[in-house]
Image (cartoon, rainbow, N blue to C red; front, side):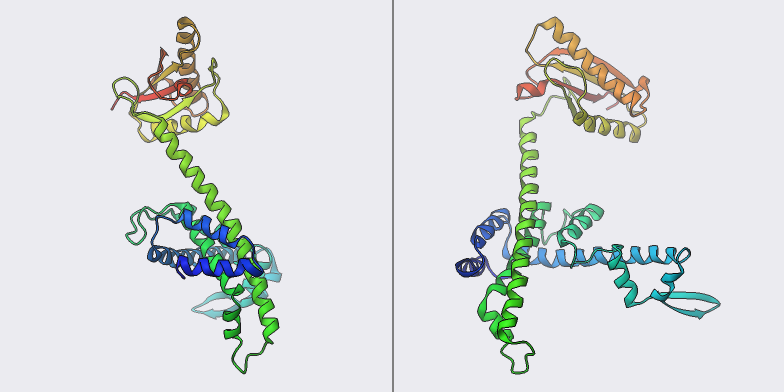
Length: 336
């Protein structure tokens, strides 16, 4: 990969005649990858290429297996395979036409008709990210996506560079006229540039999401085990309400999963209220919130009621720095 300085020079040249806003695109990528060295970015490009190739190969293998299963129901598919008989068994092998058929019938999406970032994200979702990779320590998903965008950006800059195109066409036996070759490169460069923009937007969204997660972690104080909880999930409530919002079922599901994985766990659910309103009302409200969460665990997630206790803790403004965060139910495993 070229250095940032070389890319900035190419971006300036491209902006001057056919690719506006390239410098802005590059600046955004540079910000996202500011904590990575040139060597780490080059390593990430190789890693991404390998992961994408592996993902597509797995998808192809899966599609071929599905196609072989479909042979039992569709005789017209037989001509997509080569057949032989050995050791008393019938064997079939996919031909090139079988791969084309897979692509045409959407059994397999290829790099030509699918954004390769989808394959990258598919690989990450399937296998996760190696946090212990010494070559690329503590890599974040948004960084991998940004590197992929950078790869497309560099490809685009090569296509916009007249000297590069002319050098490729300088051979006397080159079969395409120079002007046609330039136009071909320009179209490919525009396509790569659009891909880079699209993937950049995804990387920026992932980055902002990760920043929001970090900010939330900072907002939530470390709370003393003896007074609050030793299980992290919390359920937030609206002011003056004990009804569980749909979005708040995620932490309840985490607790349900925890209790299934720890059959001896007995969890106390503690309800709290923020300081608004009178003390008597807030005491009842905090109890109602704890009871609402218990009911959800029992009715929705089939956790035995005997493993759950509730306690209304009344008013607090000390759990979290953000006042509204104190309208919560927390969890404590009493077996710990």
